Length: 392
Image (cartoon, rainbow, N blue to C red; front, side, top):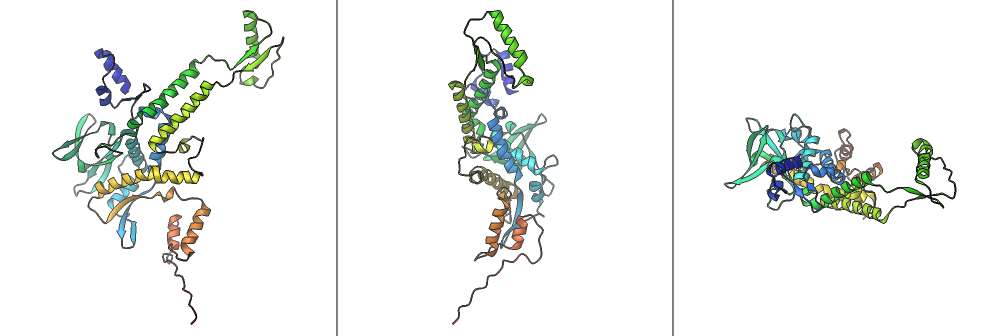
C-alpha cells in the first residue's frame, strides 16, 4: 500500500526518485539490498514473522496478575479494579491475550505501543484502547508530552497521563526504536534473497538431467525420444519405471552447483542475522542447524532470561508507573512459571527438596497451587523439623 502511494506520487509529480524525507514520512526504510522495508512489509520475511510471533505469543501466553503487598510477601489482588482488565479483558473487543500480543507486536515492528486509558467519572480505569502506533506522533510542549493521532478521520490529542506507552530501546527515552528499522539491512537482504530464489526457480532453465549418445541424432529423433520419455516415464503415475536406452545412450543427472550451495549458506546466514536483532536463537524459529547451548532445555532457559524477560519487565514497569502510579500497595507482574514448569519428574523432585530438605521452605499448599490444585485446609504450614537432642 505504501509503495503504491509512493509510485502514485512519482507518476503525478514526475520525480524520478522520491526524496528520503518522503519515504521517512511514510515509514519506509530502504536497505542496501534495494528492498524497501516497512513494519508491516517486513513480515514478508518468514524469519521476522517467526521472531515476532514467538515473542508476542510468549508475552500474551503468560498470566499477568495484580498483587497486593503483604508483610509476608504478596498475594493476588483479584478484587482490584485493574485485575480483570490486565488478566482477562482490557476492553470489550479484546481478550488479555490478543491485547498483549498486539502490544508486543507493535513494540517490535514500530518501536512503541500506545493504549488510551479510559476512566469513569470517579477517575477509575475501566478500559484500555490500543492505537495504531504507525499513526501516533509524540510532541513536547511546555515541558509536557502529548500524543496526536487520528481516529475515524478525526484528529485526537492525548496528554501523557492518558496513554499507556510501552516503548522499545530509545535514544531519547521517549520515542522507541523499531527493531525493523534497526535491522533493515539484514531484513532487506533476507527479502532480497527470497525474491532472488523465487525468480531463479521461476525462470530457471537448467535441466536436472541429460542424455548422452555415441552418435549424433537429428532434431526429429531428439524430439521423438523426449516425447517417448515424457509419455512413458513422466509424472507421478510413472514414478519408479525403468527406461530402456539403446545405442549406448546414458542418462546423467546434474549435480548441485557450488553457486547453489553458497546461496543456501547465504540464506542461512540471513536467518541468523535477523534472529540476532530480535535476540532470538534461530533454533527457536525453525532453524534446526545447530543449538547455541548443550540442550534444548538450556536453550529455552536462555530464551526466558535473555530474550523474553527484558520485555516482561519493560511492560510491567510501564503498567505499574502509569496505571498504578502512587499506589505503593499494589503491583502488576507477569508469572513466567507457566513456561518454565519442566517435566513432571523434575517438578516433583524440586517439590520434595522444598518440602523435606534440611531447611524446608515449601508448604503442601504451595505445591498444590503450583500444580493448579485447590487449597486444602491445614496444608499452609511449613513442616517443622525436630532438632535431635544431644545426650549430656
